Length: 189
Image (cartoon, rainbow, N blue to C red; front, side, top):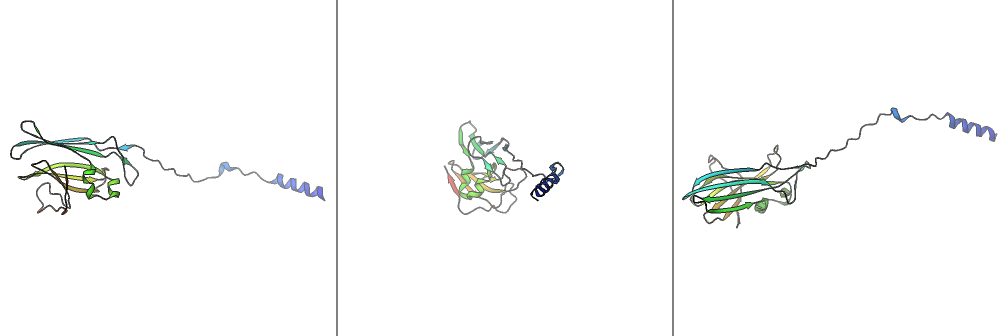
């Protein structure tokens, strides 16, 4: 009987069919391709000539910052931040104002989460009065497809002092009835 059981056991093992895994279709496991390139906005330069109790030339130069931390957007893409230099010269070539701006100049008006995902987008001269030159500034997403930004009004007075106010409306062409700003403004030296 033992011999019969042994023969049955061997034959049962022999009759076991081997499973061929070559014809089993498994779904492909998607793997996420991570974009490791670091984006940067283009370098720009603008020049304006104004009469402000004399002839002045305003140079505004934006360039990506190579050093420092990168800005990480919600989609995972990383960008370099920007710095913007405003240089204002008199008709005789002497320098009235020369200052470099970074996103930190606007930090008092931004929360930490927004600062982490935004860059200094731009500063553009747009107007003057008897005592101030005015620039429209913005901090926001460097992604060209995004319209996420916070507008600012930057003023430079005759003493070269800078005022920064968060805007709700930017009036760069003079068509708005009034420009609304926060009551508090930040002064930098």
